[in-house]
Amino acid sequence: MIVAVTGGKGGIGKSTVSLNLGRELDAVVVDADLSTADLPRGDGPDLHDVLAGRSRALEAVQRIGPVRFLPCGRTLAGARASDLTEFPGVVDRLERECGRVVVDCPAGLARDVGIQLESAHVAVLVTTPDESALVDALRTRQLSLDLETPIASVVVNRVRTDGAADLATRVERKLGATTTVIDELPAVDDAMAQWRPVRDTQSECEAIEAFETVAQSVERCEKRLSGRIGVL
Image (cartoon, rainbow, N blue to C red):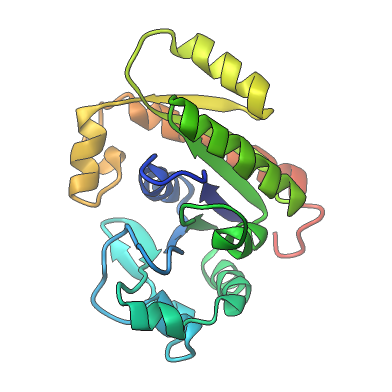
């Protein structure tokens, strides 16, 4: 199963969701933002090297604590040398060799994220409660459906007010997928400052249950799609 974590707008917490979802699903997390990578740099070959043919995907996989990840380079030259058309083959190979894959997609729409999104079996759509992020989430949802990548779950991140259940219901109705709300919590920010999943830094944090719920939604989609995905 290949899962794309996407959302259109930058700064909404896609990397946070990707890292924690990778922990819950025991997946390899791929930092697929070629120009503004968010996950750690790593200390070996990266996605730029893989897409340029200088390294095999498995050779570039490293660890953030218990989570396997494929970092992305930070240089403009590396991004320019990367052949993004190779990306579907890269994540397919990782899936065959490692099992589940979570793709941390770049911000943007259409060509900015299309190949990464089309390479996935399902998507997890991340937004924040503000209007601009929700509008971008709607656009990303449509792009995902156009690419025939179903939405497994929606995450409304960094919620600061009460009424989470009502918010989840309204967003779920609008976006047409099971919706989980994650409050804005210092424990989540602290964990990301250490590049660690919340489960491994703050074992009592309520966000862990939310990430579990998202993972369960993905697993339900995995079961439904298993008859149509030959590798599962």
